[in-house]
Image (cartoon, rainbow, N blue to C red; front, side):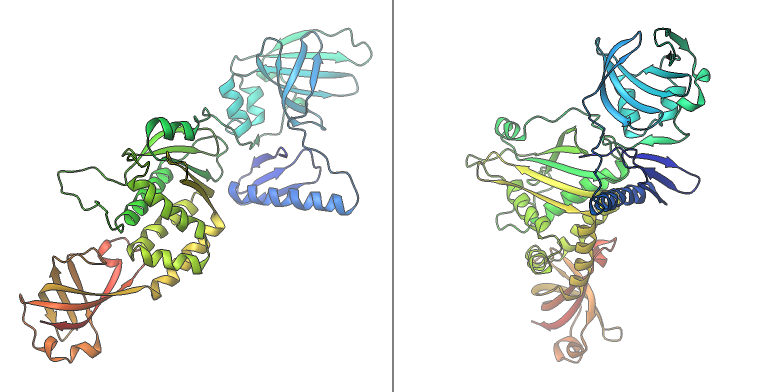
Length: 459
């Protein structure tokens, strides 16, 4: 059940209250903080009522109510925003299907109805908070409103009158700055992912990031861009470690076997429909499907270190950096994220979800794994740099290796620096080098992602 929350922005803070729960109020420094605090306040308020043995008011948002507005006929309520207060505020439709926003209040002399027509688009802007409640009346789309006064002593003496926004009585208007904050779907619902996967023979992904402080189905492009780019990088990193991976293609073949395309955006928190760029094979499997299956394991591991660490080690040290950057992009802009995979293969697919709190925990774990994650390799390469004084080395190689590099540089260990092969080494000669890498998480440049040390050198 959803209680209507009305928000108000002050000079340096936000306030919020729940009309259905008198006394349930809160204040926060940011809108996001206020959203969290008011939900906690609602829970505490309800618990207090229950402990005292009092009835808990039901949300009035979707109560099936209709009003016979004098001279205007029956109006069916779409949503109640302020129900048990004066003035009451609700949206409604009359028999012809037109949308209206209505406020109604009364004093000792009469009851007054104030009705303003609204379009579907404006309705969405009002309920999501883009237009505050006062401006919804004082800055109407058509520039006028209908007012109906019904005297208490003679209800038959009522008639509608057209008034201008500047003629609205102050006691019928919401306070300045008050606005709603209802989740509002401003995009159409997406088609069935099962039908789409089957008809297109492609892997279908639904990525649903729940952006903080945004009540409409919209998303900031800077955050969205980083999230989608980060997601593709993690998928590429996973795919590169499959035994039959074709990720190292010739330059003239620009297709990515793990490529993802965006198909459409639909209703929900912000529902992004993605698909594999390649079709599935005759067995209904694909490169991307294999990578997504592993990514879901990573996402579902959450902040369970026991499950997370082997997955990071399985796909190499760079996966930790890419996954950390993805989670940072998400945690900076969303409250939670869900990924749903639908495959043409009837036995494949799955869902994973992480909250912002879980993402932050995973980031902390990854940053501690950094100090423990290392891999020792042996490669054949050309010694292009060596300094006994600074204990540093540089080696070029054509060998395929765990770190996917053709160039290594770093420090020589104290144990290795005194060995004869290193002290007598000659530049431009070919050697077998034993190198150990220690992952560094979150650095900007690739060459700073891993620190390398030379353990030994031989011919």
